[in-house]
Length: 232
Ligand SMILES: NC(=O)c1ccc[n+]([C@@H]2O[C@H](COP(=O)([O-])OP(=O)(O)OC[C@H]3O[C@@H](n4cnc5c(N)ncnc54)[C@H](OP(=O)(O)O)[C@@H]3O)[C@@H](O)[C@H]2O)c1
Image (cartoon, rainbow, N blue to C red; front, side, top):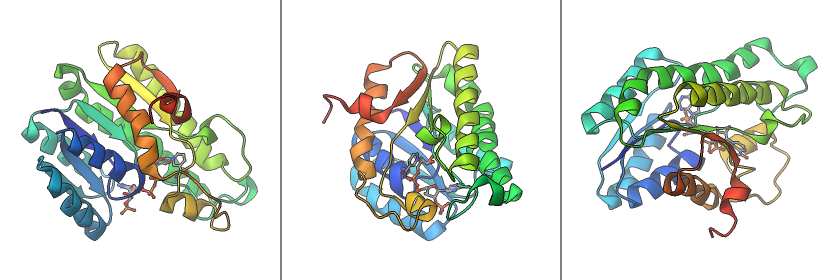
């Protein structure tokens, strides 16, 4: 069975994707920093009967990234790498004049540097997979100038460009940057605590990611709403 590494998979979009892939028979390597929440996710995934390696840790830790890839190797390889774990840089978000530079550094480190580090670690296994693919979870804040989203958006723009160049350098892989659109998750609540308007559940966005896996369009940047057209 195929193997996916999904970072930030204890809740939100990462967990919803893990459940959908487990339902399809994928074996999984998952991480998040908070062990108990990750354990709860693994317990929920047990119903699908696939193999799940859950490793608590921080994606910015190179040793942890190596452990994620080693765990995938033990499960058979890496068919899919999903860089989903993310940092906002400030919680709640603030205007650039107030953005702590250490917050910007953290957003860049988690969202871009760690994502590349994990790709570098996994590349040999991705290249030897029959249909290796990388998904980087982006945001419309990478492309639009929303007040207070500058640091996070800059880090996601960096991630988008890494994905685009990786796609050019690795024509044998698919590399998809995906803007999932707004979702009702802890990350959004931490970003904008006063904004409790209705937003899609992350599980409603997962079919967009599954469409990429099913149809394997060209590498590039995709937005979930377009991928979801005619899919739900
Ligand atoms: N929610 C939205 O409206 C929205 C919109 C556009 C894009 N996105 C993107 O969608 C992706 C998923 O976000 P979400 O909304 O589903 O967030 P979420 O529900 O808050 O989940 C984030 C996950 O990442 C883990 N995580 C965070 N930092 C980590 C780190 N340094 N190392 C390892 N794991 C880490 C979290 O667990 P721990 O905290 O225990 O580590 C959790 O499992 C992110 O890339 C986000 O930028 C979200």
